Image (tube, rainbow, N blue to C red; front, side, top):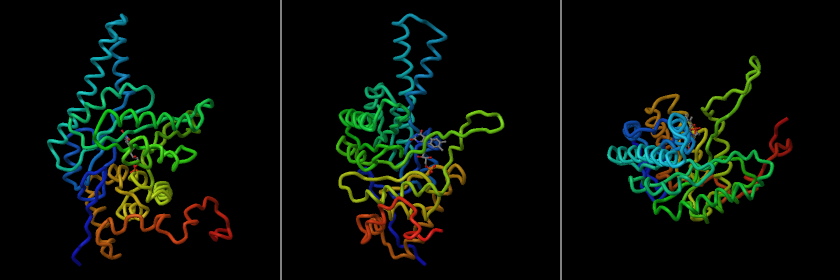
Length: 328
Ligand SMILES: Cc1cc2nc3c(=O)[nH]c(=O)nc-3n(C[C@H](O)[C@H](O)[C@H](O)COP(=O)(O)O)c2cc1C
């Protein structure tokens, strides 16, 4: 059977050949790796995040080996930050020179506004859009929901004033009201919200009685999170929703698009199966779309969202009540 499905999508005002985006990770930390993603058929790539912590660590290392004099230390700080940013800008420039798919830069914002002054350099290096990887660990007993949300909003507002390229904001799911936050981010200037980042996870080693790190890789079951929130929020005007977490195959991409995602970001499945997986995912998606009679992605997007449902209450269900869901 001849495949007719049209996989083209727009995301952040950019034209993508298909909705499969390689998400921010070490799969995208050099121009060569970005070129390999494009060759494998990715619709777009998000570069590995530029982390404040990494640059700070480099600064601390140099400062320890050299001087304590404040002026000199300030000078070193400036040089190191400049060097870190130059390296990142070089990756953007190299990637843009090597591929024709959109290249989205990513910057991690955790605390201070050190990065604010540098964001314009990412735009002038040629990034097509910026993904703000904002991550605050909400462990503080004295910081309530509003304060945490205010940090996100303030960050987006600041960046919005500094660049004219589109901005996506990538968030985790530790919020008491995700729709309220998404709305605030939209008003602050975000063009898209990526749901969800998957943070460093901890585990406990019961033999050595130590805290350890859990695997950074996701399982396909984790797709339930983006499906839940994207299907609930699809249709809110002026903000696109991108899915990340647990998308491992063509059916996974189909699911998040049906929920209402603009694009599907993939990571773990590429670490596990190699970049050729992108072609397999796209092929499976096309075959599935043909079988279901969907001619284009726009045709299917949001079909299973709350907005398009005649039983919207099913999207609001939180508890397993035996009488409703049939589990003994
Ligand atoms: C090894 C590794 C490195 C990652 N680095 C970043 C990063 O620099 N910035 C970021 O926003 N997300 C980063 N992520 C998160 C991924 O982009 C993605 O959101 C997450 O893994 C969930 O997608 P998945 O289920 O397809 O793996 C990283 C994930 C992994 C596994």
